Amino acid sequence: MTGKNLLQIALILSLTIFLTACLGISGQDTVTDIEQTIEPSETGSPDWYINPFYPPQETRIIRGYGRGASPEQARLNALEDISRQLGVTIHSEAQDLTMEFVQEQQQQITEEYTHRVRAEATHHLKDWRLEKSKQVGDQHYAIIILDRRAAPVVVAEKIKNSLRIQPGSVKWIGPRSLINGNIIPKIESTLLRKGGEQATVELNLQRRDEQWYLVVRPEESEPFHVALDEPDFPRLFGLPVKNANNLVQLSLRPLDILRGYNRLREGDWFIFEIAAQTEGHITLFNIYEDGRVSILDENLQIQPGSNREIPSQKEQAAGEAFMAFPIEHNQPTQDLYLAILSSTPLPTSGFQRLLEESPPLAGETSYQIHRLMEWLDEHQANIQDLDVISVLIQP
Image 1 (cartoon, rainbow, N blue to C red):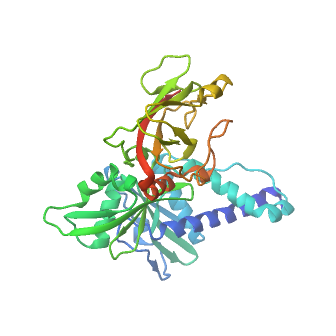
Image 2 (tube, rainbow, N blue to C red):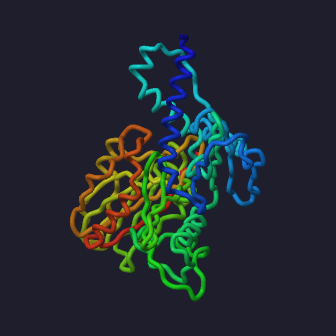
Image 3 (cartoon, rainbow, N blue to C red):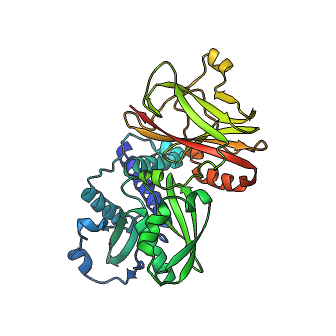
């Protein structure tokens, strides 16, 4: 057996595991009420495969059809049908493998192949679901649905389907930073009707399989998940604004260069200036637009009417400062910086610290915006005030 044959076996196994994992997520995250059906074997291809129906482009719902020698191959071909409609190419790099390498590194091959597939398709082929499948003789057929509508529209539709009514108002339960965010009015604009009953809906944010999801649980119903695109994030959260007492103020100052208000370019050096009107402790967070979170400094004592610089003047004299990095090279980034004034030191061990080397944050454990939301609610009693600024980092 040649190295090429062994690679094909390894990739087929990888695809099977990858599709099985994806189907485990997608099975309960349906947008429509159509359930998966597996019909008994019969002769001839299914009518729905012979005469496929492709929804109009403006619906933003894409249907893919596939056929193969196994259920996994049929679903893969259906995903490829969708990818052709989107203009997305999914491929992997090939290399010669020995049998010994395949046996010893099978798990690594699977993980690396899955990662390559996700890296190329995650923004296009996610939250898909199997609508229908059928076996005819030794051939398997599948229809896969990809819903590309905006998250608030999908959430509203699925809440109505779960409740079997269109409510007139909703009591939202969840982190304040989420239920006070801009996504709630967008959901309610599609969900509510005048004169309807009140419903209770629990809303949370979850990170899994390198993807953000809204977890929605209407009253007396099973929870469902709706995938979020990164562009949803800037308009998703309603981080608490500063209190009316105006006890803390956060500002950013570039070093040795003039820029527009809260605007930086990649490679710019800058510091933070914080003013407080009462005694307390300052903790400073950096929130990336993709949901990553890091602590820049924590529990710094501050006196009434005083200002503090981060890094301190002594640290600046030693050459320390922050450098602006976009999330992706040559792409603008909108960062949030959150300064918290607390009456007592706050526990921060659950969050990552900014590293001296660049890029500053990496890895799935850095995606902690949902943890920060819960943390803010948990320590609300000790938070005297806070301030948030948005900074545009340009290439």
